[in-house]
Amino acid sequence: MASHSSYAKAPLNLPQLPIMIHVTAPAALPAGYTFEAEINGDESKIVTIEVPEGGVQEGQVFLAPLPEAYVGTRIDAPTGRWKSGPFDCFSAGFLHPSLWCSICCTQIAMAQVISRMQLTWLGQPGPSSNTSRAFTVICLLVVAFFVYSTALDLAALPYDIDTTPTYMAVLRFAGNFLFTFWSVYALCRTRQNVRARYQIPEEQCIGCEDLCCSVWCGCCATAQMLRHTGEYETYPGICFSPTGHPPGAPLVV
Image (cartoon, rainbow, N blue to C red):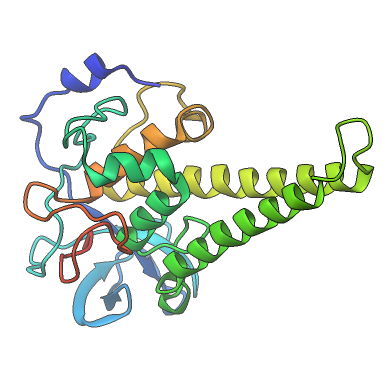
């Protein structure tokens, strides 16, 4: 994982790279072909996309640069580098909602990043019918896991360590494993997509940086993504909000 100093030394005067957007191919198209596409299924956000080298197949989701002519509202964030390092946790303030939401409930904070990026509950691109429900789905998963764990704790109260039924231990392990596996996988995929959209290269643990950050310091990785995909200089942070911003604040694009 990159140190604070490696991010602080990143040059700030490099040419600005275009932000990338996910596009679903309407048909099998050759390289160089241009067509109009809606951003995130929004009919008011139509841009002209050029098919990348190699062509695309119908239904294929690919990344394309956002045209310079696009004038819609979006969050102001740098491309080619992170806005701040993973350990710059207090850069937005010691009591900032993005920090404490990431620490106290990493999954909900991750859901806010997913809402801004308009990804699915697995942290990957998908149809708007799925991405629009991602925050709700993740909240339900967190609540369901809490209820499941609490129910097992209450059921185990009459027993001590030596007499606890084996099935309770199995159920507890299975629940913890599945919830942890989903949390790490979704966070890793979300971070991959944030880097892809903003063209941010890996700096440490090349080839597995997103996985390492998700496993070893998920709350730091989540807070870093919240700071990058948010604009806290303009809009206040909110813990109990699908995007972590007030209603009406722009999304990534």
